[in-house]
Image 1 (cartoon, rainbow, N blue to C red):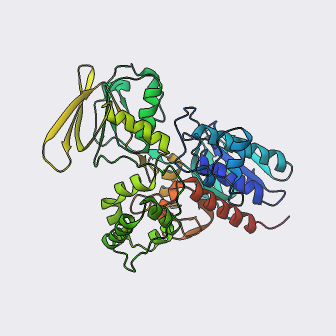
Image 2 (cartoon, rainbow, N blue to C red):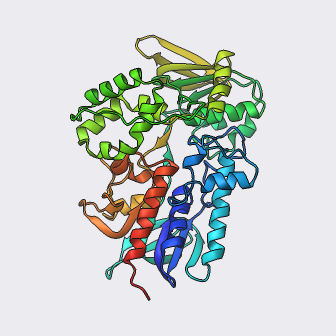
Image 3 (cartoon, one colour):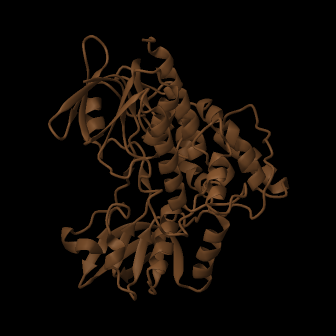
Length: 450
C-alpha cells in the first residue's frame, strides 16, 4: 500500500507529528506510523511511574497543541492534579495526557483519515523513480509513502573509555534500556558517569528503591543542573551585541545576569531568540560554543523542578552523593568491583575509587546515526548527511532533509532532536510541538484535494 505520509518513530516527536497530521490532513488521506515501541508517544521519558521524575518545564508550557496552550493544565485539573501555571507535573502523568489526547483524536477522525500502526523497525529507505519513498521493514515486508517524517530518538552516548567484556551487569551502558535497578543491592557503592539530568533521575530512582550506599558522580566539569525558581518570574529579553563572537555574547549575558534580580529572567528571556541566534552563528562559532560553553549552558538552561533539586541537595549535604570534576582515565575489573581512575580537573593528580556498579549517564549521542540501521542506510544511499558538528542530520529551515549533496528533498522531513544542527533548541516539548505543527501543515497543504 502507498500511504500519503509515513511517520517513523515512537517517542514524543512521533506522537506530536501524528496528532497534528490527524488535525490537518484532508479527508480520505492515509497515515502509517512505523515503530517497534508499544508505548507509542510516551517513549522512555514519559513512561516512568516514579513520582519524583518530574517534567523540567512548567505545566503552562506543556500542551501538545500550539493553539490550546492551557490544554495540559485543563487535563491536570480535571483529574485533581495541581494545575497551577508554574506546577511541575510528573512525567508519568504527561505520558497519560498524551495517550488520552491521542485517543480522543482517533475517535473523532477515524472516519476521515486512515491511520495504521505498523509494529516493526524500518531498516532501509529508498527514493522511488516516480517520486516518494519505499521502506523495507525488519519483518521482511515493505511499504511506500508520498511523504516521510523521521521522528527517531537519539542514542545513548558511549562510555568514555573501554572496559572488560566480562564485567557483566556491573557496568550499565544504557540506564534507560536495561532493568538494572532491580539488581542493585541496598549497600552497593555506585559510580555514575555524567552529572546532568539523567544522573539526577537515576540517583532519585535508586533512593526510592531502597538503595543506601554511596554514590560517586564523575563528570568533566562536575556541574549539576540548577533549579527553576520557586515563584513565577517575568522573562527579560537580553540586550545582545551585534558581534557574534562567542566570548562577547557570553560576556554580555553574564553582565545582565549579574544585574538582574534573578539570573533566570535573562535565560528565559533568551529562549525565544535562541534558534535565530544559533542560525546566525557560523560553523566555527558554533564549534567554539560547543567546546567551551555547552556544559554551562546545559545546567542553566535545562533546569530541575524545585522539589527535585531540593531532594538531590539533601543527598549532597548528607554526604550520600559526592560530585567530582575530572577526566576518566581507565575502568578495570578488580575481584568483584570496578576500579575507576580519573585525573582531577585543573590538575595532574590521578585519583581512584572502587565501586560495585558503574552507570553511564553521560548523555545522548546527538547525531543518532550509529544506533539506527535506517539512518545509516539512508546515509549510504545519499538520502541524508550528518551535521558536520555531530548535532544530527542536515535539514533546511522548514525541516526538509538534505541529501548527500546538500539539496533539500521534497516530501522528506525530520522532527525533533535529529534537527538540532539547524535549530539547536529542539528537544523540549514547547519547541517540538511548533515544529511538528509546521511540518504537518506543510504536508497537508501539499496534497491535492480528492
